[in-house]
Amino acid sequence: MPSPAKKPAAKRDAKAAAPKSKAVGKEVRPGSADAPVRSGSTPQVPRGMKDILPQEQRYWRHIYKKIESLARGYGYERIDTPILEETSLFVRAAGKQSDIVEKEMFSFIDKGGDNVSLRPEGTAPVARAYINHGMLAMPQPVKLYYVGPMFRYERPQHGRYRQHHQFGFEVFGDSNPVIDAELIMLAHQFYKDLGIKTTVHINSLGCPNCRPNFTAEIVAYFRSKRSQLCEDCKRRMTKNPLRVLDCKVPGCVALKEAAPHIVDHLDDDCKNKLMRVLEFLDDLQVPYVLDPHLVRGFDYYTRTVFEVVLSDEQVIPAPLPVPAAPAHGHRGHQAVPEAQPVQEVPQPMPAVALGGGGRYDNLIEQMGGRPTPACGFGIGLERAILQMKALQIDPPDDNRTEVFLAQLGDQARRKVFALFDELRAADVRVAANLSKNALKGQLEAANKMGAKLTAIIGQKEVLDGTVLLRDMESGMQEIVDYNKAVLEITKKLGRE
Ligand code: HAM
Image (cartoon, rainbow, N blue to C red):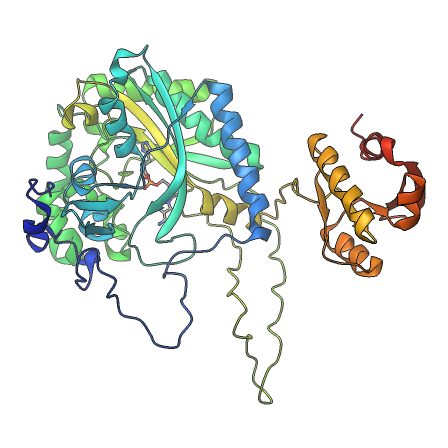
């Protein structure tokens, strides 16, 4: 689906350029505001997308920290690419017949008549950036990482959203199998750092030299079973036969069991490279299983492909009791109040990929760059968080208020402002409610925020040049000199 040729804006025929994907849905004039509105109803979050509320943020902060620490530790530089790209980028990279391109892209024609898509994944945009910015001229390998939202028009279900967040690590310019192993180790290590045990499923999809051989084997095997395949797979058999191995329809999954193993049909070079990756994984003590039917949803992969799944040994705690919905309305009826968000019950996802990736040695060349080997992986942050919750792994609450500043009167408020700034400069997490006058309400707020200390300045303290420090747990109070307040507070917080 290439972008339409440039024409004067007024003459561009947006309709002709509209992608054929069903995901585009009912046509609305490009750039118009005439979307249907349900009168009187409150706007809702789009289906399959979620708000990330303040109480969730500590999970996200925790995960971002782990990603950054891995990236820094292993020398990966951050790259950010636009959320919107030309549709043709994903068609070329993922493949015209991939589910992503055929069914799952949010594509539309922009006001200038260009065919664009919300990115469904990060590898193609980063590969584009590598070519666009001449990174081939930099010392190789170039190691990059990214974090951000991805969009796929999928059927929403537990752990599958239409907007998810993904981080990815990509290495360009090195074909050595040790790179594959490093990336697999990093994906595994990310979960280990979170306290989650995972196993890696690994396979090789060979290269253009040997792929036709095993594709023929797969076609021969499924041909006699064609009538038992689902409709999608019947189509895949002619257009993209390896994708039959990735079908999740139970009938096709059962047929796959006795299908030929790709690894048995690799050429010597691909076989050796796979063996090298496995040896490195043994050295790195990364648990893996060879999964001879593993294929992935993008056409760009060559040789190594892998997925990270929850390990069988991961001890799964008993599920937390889900609070019963309060009774409302008529007798015998239990109803959730309207404003209550529907809670997703955390449950482990043993069969779901927590991450995946592989080598894509031909993608840069296919996209018009010089031949450049590459390898990478992506991990879904929502899935990592669901897994943390299911396993009752609690991230540190590092944003919790340490000191609440309470005040009584205008003069005290001025002093609190100054103290606020000094404490902030000393890296203390401070909060106040400057519009409140009653001490009781302010202490309640401090309690709710979980503050360790409350510093109180009333009229007496203003006159004396002091601050009353209250330990919120013990209730003990102490008068300290206003000028030494920051020192005393940091001491009490154990920050010396
Ligand atoms: P992917 O397997 O499609 O690979 O996605 C990577 C990870 O993103 C998945 O394993 C899963 O954790 C998460 N994920 C994908 N789709 C969803 C969804 N709808 N809802 C929630 N989480 C989701 C890629 O995207 C490749 N670009 C990875 C890669 C990087 N290969 C080489 N380099």
